Image (cartoon, rainbow, N blue to C red):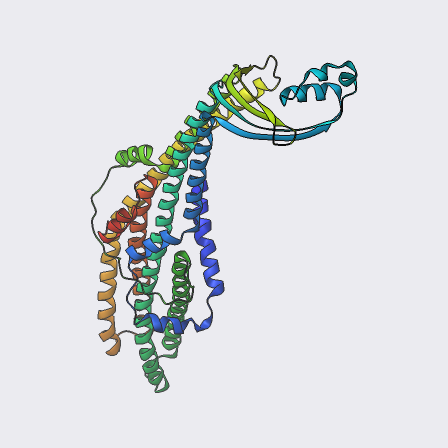
Amino acid sequence: MKKINRNLSAAMAGLLIIAFCIIPANIAFAEDAASGSAPLTLEDFCRRVLAYYPKLKEQGVTVELAIARKLQAQAGFWPKLQGLADASYSDDPVYVFGTLLRQRAFTQDDFDLNRLNNPNARANFDVGLHGEIPLFDAFQTISKVREAKHMVESAKHGEKFTRMEALLVASDAYLNTVVVEKVLKKVAETCKNSETDIKQAKELKDKGVVLGADFYAAKVIFGSLRNINNNLTAQKKSMHALLNILMGEDPLKPVQVADVLQEGNGASVDLKKWLSQAYTLRPDLLSIEEAIQAQEAHVSGERASAWPIISAFGDLRENTEDFRTGGGSFAVGLKGSVDIFEPGYSSRVKMAEKSLQKLKYQKNIAADSITKDVTSEYARLESLKANIPLLRDMADDSDQAVDLVLPLYREGRKSIADLLDMRQGNIRTYQAYYAALVSSKNSSVRLLFLSGQLDESQAIGMIAAGK
């Protein structure tokens, strides 16, 4: 599971780096065009991500490959039919004698000793069919079919897990874009109001009404606010590019997201149930279980390979010298083979058994990782749920504080630095509140992912319900 977490984090980090590198300064043109378009809903975004996600397509090919291998294994039950042909020309006495017999061209004169010892060269064209059907192949075909069947199921579980991964990445990117835009909107409004107050304070400073120390302290705070605004603007551009990349679109294509950050109280599910669902539904765990059953079939096949192999065969042959005359023949029978001494048998069996043992250890490791990740995420979600109401109250109190300080500043009872400091605190409070809100939604979606329940309806429903 650590590997999964690292892969997801690395994938998101890589996409963000690409987004930062490929977005030019003139992206403002794309933003202007986006302002008049309909917002991209979370449902539509998830659908388009799933339609494009390259890793999901790759996994789909893996499933098709596993199905093809299953069909290939099943072909071992069917008879084989071969067409045969050869042409030869020789004066070898034995060859000529046999050829005359096969061509039904032997005459009394051919018994002449001189002709037997010194025959004329003769041509022979041999065409025919050879069929063979296995009667007992030491359970090799049955073992291969069982192994292939389980590998098909394993690949399907892998595809489902990749689909869940795509939804997790999509919801995380969409929610982070929403929160960046919400915070940026508030910061931009604060900067606009503060810029007006700074200009007024400068006029008052020049008249000697406002202390220079207060004015310059306020400018420092205002610079910090503008810095936050610039960083968020750049982050918004990169997040829009990231959304387009996940959909397989032009990174510069205009994007407008819908606000889905609604606070709510979802139904609480206890940790024991989350863990039970994870052990039962996790596709990656189910994939390993199918791989274990496939390997068990492989071990059985390797052990049984020491048994004899028996098959039935039939031949139809036609021998001719000129394609006008000739003789036909047939042959049917049984043939079998058994390895009396095969040095590699014990090594093959041991390798198969050790591979099975390794898969079982991998299953135990995966189960332990699931327990750890679900427990950790559950604790994180519970902490966020407890903190969100507190942060919301802090944000409301911060709004009240700004509203109360503003008239005091205009009455001269508070400095311009006090006002901007209060606004900066207001921004930080809202950043913390929105971050907790989006983290709770991401955590809820991640719990669905970790428990193997994540799909489009679950992800969208969990976010829309404010759980």
